Every structure is written in structure tokens, then in C-alpha cells.
Length: 200
Image (cartoon, rainbow, N blue to C red):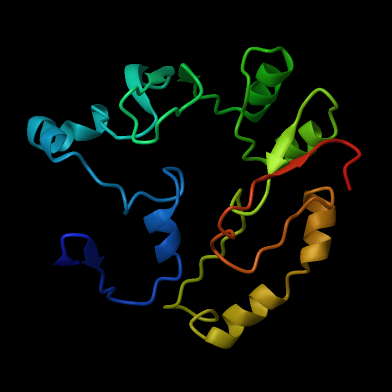
């Protein structure tokens, strides 16, 4: 890693890494290599800086009880005037699929990130819910061990990927709602799709 100039960093990898753009530039749950740490917070907290979040985003942390609840309030010094539109947010970890879905149904939460097929398919069929999804909302990753046969052979890796029938995958796992992609990044400015029961 080398600082080319005050606004440019150059990375030289020891080996090819197809996931590099993902782990570098995607949201927190996908990768954090591109995250910039507050120098003042790093100096103050050292190795414990992860427990004292500091950022320049649209919200500020007001309280955090690990594994229970995270409360945020609007950041009045946010760099985009007029944003965010919300006064605050509350995040709660709901690791169980059924608990997440039930919490939506009983009105205990306003939104969930549906990371599992049975949540998304069920919600899409429920007229009380609105499902947002689209490019960038998820995907399938295949990790091959290049050091061992058969996947040390590029032809075998390519054969495994080409053997997947995306239409069959969409029908069997996603109720024919699978959105295809030809890039790691969605086209700039494209809003997420909004689907409800009966949408084509």
C-alpha cells in the first residue's frame, strides 16, 4: 500500500483477488478496507477505536449497547444540506430469521434487511409488506481453493460457474424474482427496484 499523493492510494496485491473491489468499496457488512478512521479517535482510543465509532455520515451515535441496540440521531453538521430527512434511527440485531419476519409482521420494527431467501419470498407474497431489491442488493460468491485439484485448474473453475442454470436458480430459490447482473457495481443513479405481490 503506497500513498501516491494526498488523495490517492495505490495497492499492489501479492496475488490476484477478484473480490478486492467488493471488500474495499462495499458497505460494512461486505467489506471495510476502504474505511477511513478518524486520526484523533485512533490516537485517543488505540486498539479500542472500534468500540468508539466516529464518522462524518448523516447520523451520530448516541448510545450503543452491544448485541442489543444502537441509537442514532440526525447529524446537523452533515455535509449535504437538508439531509438526512429522519431525526434518528434505532438498530437492533435480530439474528433469527423467524424473529426478524415476525417483528415486521407485528409492527415491532419498520424495516428489516432480508438476507435470507425465505424472508424475501414470503414478504414479496405478503400484501402488507413492500420489498425493495435490485442490483447491488446481494449475490452469490464462489470461493475456490486454487492450491488443490480440481480447482487449481482454471478450466474447472469456469466449468463449475458455467454449469449453474440461473433460470433454474431463480425459479427454485427466488420465486423467479432473481435480478441478473453483469458487473460488481450497479449503474450510477439506478434506484432500487420496488416489488409487491402481482408485480411483473
